[in-house]
Length: 294
Ligand code: SF4
Ligand code: SF4
Image 1: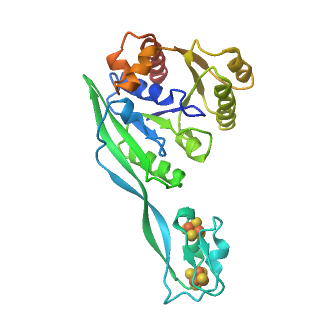
Image 2: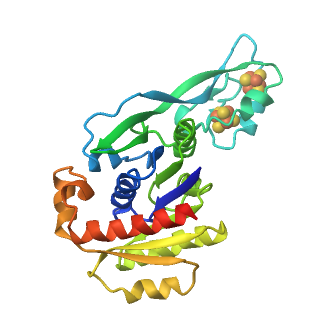
Image 3: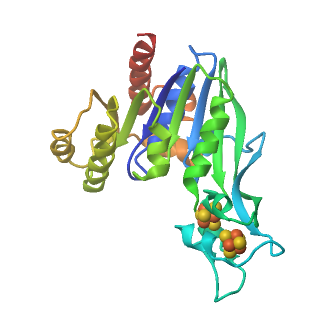
């Protein structure tokens, strides 16, 4: 299996456009391709692909402690061991659990000397597997989605990636969340290649610097895609790139067809194949195909 991650530091750089377009283009030559939308707080690959309904839903469950008051001696060991503050004892009362703060690590379960903690499944979100076909091009979209208000993104990303791997893909493309936190680096931890998407703006440069710090530290092979090329000042990115390792650089020109594709939920590659942005994406796809073959 070959694994590629598409990431971008800040949101709105066009990361999902690149991921969905590459999945669509590469699926012409690769039979078992899986695209993972690992942006669990705001998955939008299905919207870009024009999919109205996600399919094959499965819950993502997290361990949540339940205190058995018939066994609990109120010793307080569990409260001391919990490093997220999810357990609280008021004086000598039984511990109470704050589900929103619990990471599901099970430390309290193993630490309780009296076997007074049982586990209950807490649903924090869902994964979906949706078949996607455009003409002769077919692939599977695996989407992870947190329930509104849930904050435990890393375990959700982990489960979403697991569900994608269960499909045994020949090529896995992971569209990570925005930012540089754990949930994002988890999305490209096992990738053979990381495609970083940025834009030539001060904010783009700032976030590019942050994400490349992470890819450098993880010793990742990196290709850079400069989206909305033609607006802003490209030299602002060049300053950042002098400090980091990037193997190849591509440019996607600013293109009104992209805005139209977003507005009407029409995949750019399919509905605007001769637009400048589509042509740039096809070039990246061709380069990727060559890289995969080697
Ligand atoms: S460690 Fe076990 S016995 Fe002690 S307070 Fe927690 S649940 Fe109760
Ligand atoms: S599972 Fe972990 S985070 Fe949750 S209450 Fe127990 S120790 Fe705290």
